Each structure stands twice: as C-alpha cells, then as structure tokens.
Length: 70
Image 1: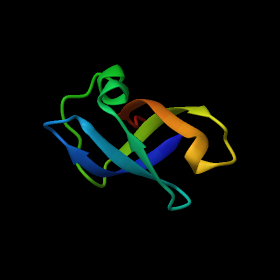
Image 2: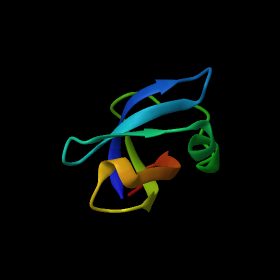
Image 3: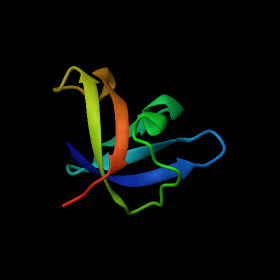
C-alpha cells in the first residue's frame, strides 16, 4: 500500500503517514526499523505494510515503512 509521510520524530523513530484518502495512520519505531530507513521527510512517498482490519483505521497497524520505488 502507498502513502505519504506526514510526521516523523528522529529521536523516537515514530511518526505517521497519510493514506491516499487522507486518513492519518501512525507507525512506531519497529515499523520504521523494519523498512531499513535512516531518515524520513514529510512529503516523501512511502510503501507501507499493514496488519489488521482493512475497513477501519482504528484496527490497522503499520508493520513496515520504506521508500516507494518505481
């Protein structure tokens, strides 16, 4: 799934993304570390992997954040 980086805190390695429909979804340090990134800037397109219920933002959890490559 694709998204846009919205926030990122380099000290905690956590932040949030905006899904293409505008829904914000947070990620934790484990998801950031799983993607092998060292830095993330707001506005960057990212690829995310999500676990949980697809129909509800509350039931979803990001398990991987990495840069979107074409």
